[in-house]
Image (cartoon, rainbow, N blue to C red; front, side):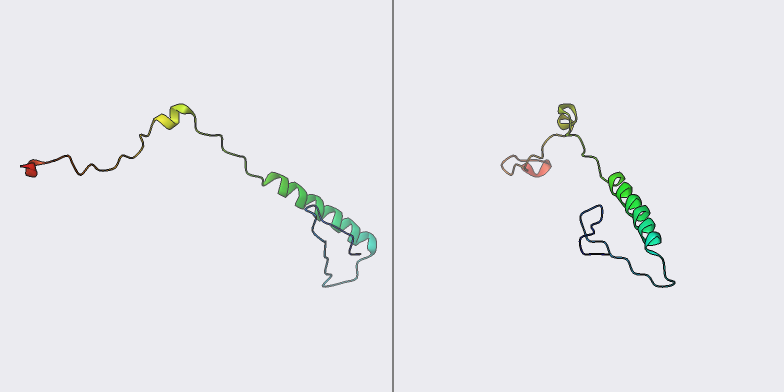
Length: 78
């Protein structure tokens, strides 16, 4: 393999043969199959964007209001 070989995501491909002695045709077939499987997995793994919340959904929860310290509450208000 040369340094010009690139994978589906643009990165350089590297193959390490640990046992046996495959022919160049066998290596080419292996790279083609693995590259295609990798590309299809990457395409399927893309998360879809969540749509923005609708106005109805936004109105379901009121914004948090700060505690008013100037208003007396409870039976200890005097």
